[in-house]
Length: 153
Image (cartoon, rainbow, N blue to C red):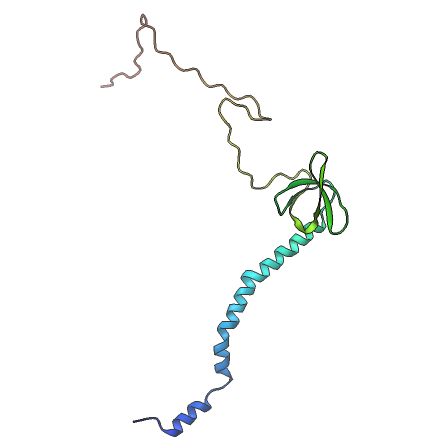
């Protein structure tokens, strides 16, 4: 019934060695390496950039908070807090860690979609809007109509 001899079965059991364990554990190591390269390393880099940005906040900078408030830094209270003016004579205290973006003095707004101009309405700060041509009127009854399309045979 069994065609495997006892000597062959013992040899197969003894062949199990350390290389089999390495072959079995290799996929787990590869998965961990991919997770580190694709997830952990970029996240650590962003965290380091955010920490540097927050440390360099100074009076007069325009900041955007995590909650979406935009204001100008009026005072740096201490190492962990800043005071932001969000409207004339309206100041709030904000933790430095709650700042999402710093727009320094004179820096243009990033990734803002272009504003569409409505015809006939000048935009603020723009020059005069070009006037549209008046509609063409049909010729009077006593004038012959001009026919620009002539047969060319």
